[in-house]
Length: 219
Image 1 (cartoon, rainbow, N blue to C red):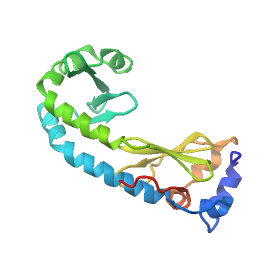
Image 2: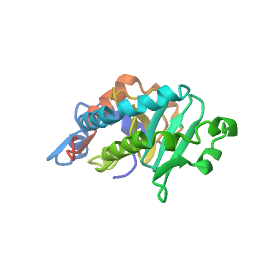
Image 3: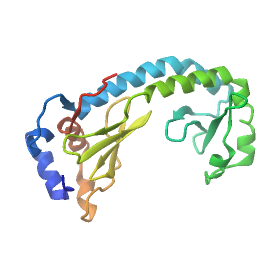
Image 4: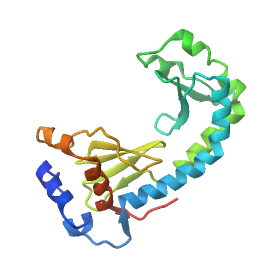
């Protein structure tokens, strides 16, 4: 399938049919992207229920930490203080998670003094961190890269949010808990993207119901 122009995208969005019908594909064993996202949310909520207590235990001890989550891309545990993100990576020999100093130095807001306060977090909370990582990994045990029936759209799913691509370029993020598109729109079209700024929240939500993807694993 050739890449869509912005006009072609708008024509599809404003049509009364879904992606499979519009582009002439079979609808067998397909569901809407929104339904697939609902399945991902269910899996996310199951994983969250298993790690929430341990996450809160760590946050209570380090009250400046605002979030802790596992990054499947980095294979690290990420935590942040509202301004900067820091990383814990497993030391396979010692079987504990330790500060990933190199990744943290890549952070432009990195501070030695800030990071030193976390140097023993992996030892103090090894059991809790292992549980957070183990159950977070379970979220990613199935394919989290989802291509639409026409291959024009695809979803790259992360733990807290998902990123919708169009024309192989990022388009907009979708919140995992609410399944609502976030405000920012990135232009995936060749033309100057003044038009994408007019893409409303309702347009984005409608698009999620029109994109068709394989049924796959719903939980």
